[in-house]
Length: 95
Image (cartoon, rainbow, N blue to C red; front, side, top):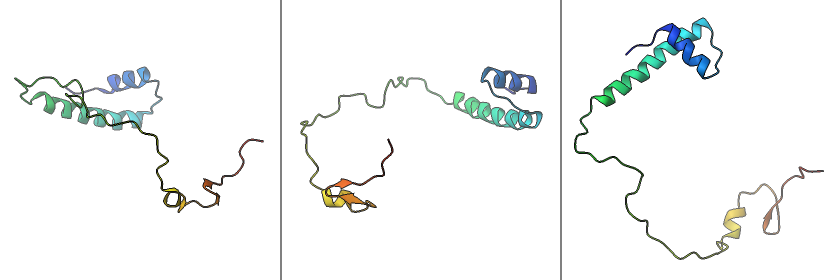
């Protein structure tokens, strides 16, 4: 499948993009390249392959939900440009 310049302009209008004639030519090449990749994917034999609905098919292992402070105050604040006690010092942003 190949897109003509009129179709590229129509796609740009639907996407609310303002494109110049030079950009139409460039976009035509890029969109045709994308469609070429899609055509390649359509050639892959997927008979017998079940559709994947998510990244994990099973239940994830659960762990106990425990609140901790991490115990790494010095490591966390080691790269702070300024600090006041155990906190980052930042400039005032609201007056």
